[in-house]
Image (cartoon, rainbow, N blue to C red; front, side, top):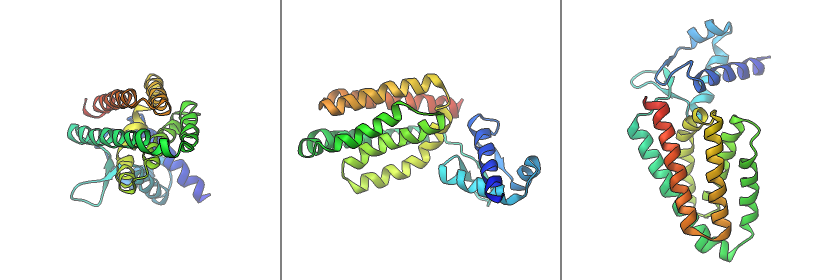
Length: 213
């Protein structure tokens, strides 16, 4: 029963954030939310903790409270700039070093690509998208690069959780995933890098539109 309440509180609160019923910067007060949902504070606190781990909620500056994650334009630009650097470095190493000496890694990349190409829902697309890019980073066989990407994944999950609920944006992302994947398996580094740059450029533009307007 407790687990069901925790999950329900998490689902409702996450949807309110994704669909901007709770807007970036809004404070989250567990007592108020508990009263609104008609439950105790414990499931609300558990939901807030999970959403903080996912990057959708953050601690308020100078207090013990929480608020809906609200990046500014500088945050978004810096995050996507670093994403582009990581992705380009990873595919460069994959195409020029890893795949020529160990072509079997393409099977793992193929499995990840198949999942992200046929998402069951917007929520699963977020996770499959993370897995696709994360697989590329991991297959580059650089542990420090993986660590940096892991930190970024939490921050960018907030962007994807909001922007991925647009069917048009999902379709556009799927198109660039295909270009990135085909570029890697064909060994076309220039085409792969161009697809990455365009994909990240559109993702950044959508995030700026959602969070700074």
